[in-house]
Image 1: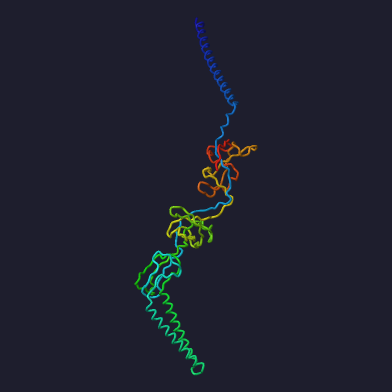
Image 2: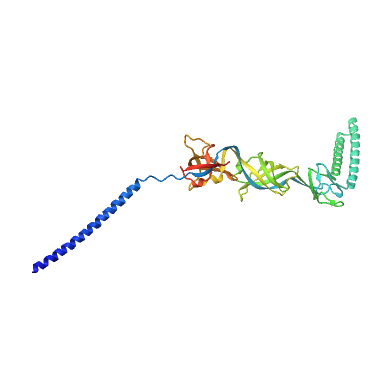
Length: 383
């Protein structure tokens, strides 16, 4: 009885173990099936056709051209100064008897300005003339005696010396009398009169009586930075930009002075530009701008500054390259990136020293949305 009861229990345990093994087998087979399914899906994905290329980017281009001559200029502030300022002083003592032109008048060289009273000088002139005549008579008498042997030659020497002294005194008085009439030494504007009629003036110390300013020619003074001064030379042309009655005018002058000494504080060098000003377009003390030329660049390439893209190192632009069988004017091509070297900036344009050639189709709008080799569609052309 004991053996018969144990056998069903053994069989039951075997049946339960078999069932567990069967379940495990089913789970393993299901996992293998899933792996096979995923593997087949990956293979199908690998063999799927590639995605379509992105559509062309719409861009605006311009044809690169070269400027035959491009002046490399720069502007600096400057101040207008008169060509000459002459202070006139009395050369003889006397009372102011007459004043001709008034302050602000235009005078010419030699024009009478002031006349001093000459009563005392007139009396001195008469005395000097009398002495000169007497010396001349004495000289003639002694010379006759010497020629006849009636007087020694030393008497003639003394008479000659006396005549020369009196003639010199006469000439001196005549000169002083002439200088009692004060005239304009240069042409210009009578900018100031320092005396009035009836006022006494002296020659020692000299009394200033008038001031004349010459503005028919003016000097425009500026200071040029040391990096630019080597490009300049005396005799070169320069432009002066001035505001005249509310409008901007450009006047042409000439560099007439470049200082040999630089300002040690500002590291700049004084430069003067001479400018004709017969019409009085500029005034002394006026603040103007001077445009100086460093050099004239030949066949310079200028492009819009906005077409340049800053890179981590350097600068770049994009141009359109066309297929070999397609020549401009074509509407579609591929973008090519070019590294460029920048030069001078002129307004909203910049010079390209290297990286572009005349005839290249430069992308000036839409260039920030393209990449090297990407297809582009030219929708407009810029100048």
